Image (cartoon, rainbow, N blue to C red):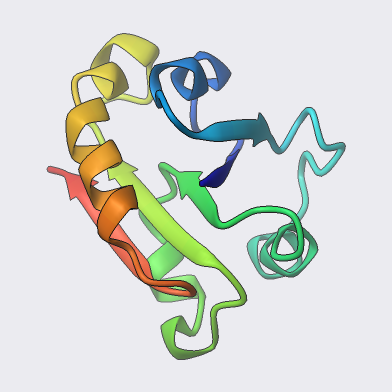
Length: 106
């Protein structure tokens, strides 16, 4: 699966998602792009946006998503905290249908 890491996710988390390819919003040159536009830009190159933006589910129409969105809810957006959720992230990625929305963590 091709994963785009949002600005709210440590870039090093991508290396822990074994079996998936990844890039970051920063590496793609999309830093500071609003969520709706970001999803439209990324949809042709990525399967899922991995974000820690807890407001994403309220900001986007989940019925009209151009790509899947996975929200990671850790107690803090640091690598050590998010790394604990990697098994749940990988399991959720394997089950996500296209253009769907899911959450992992607290």
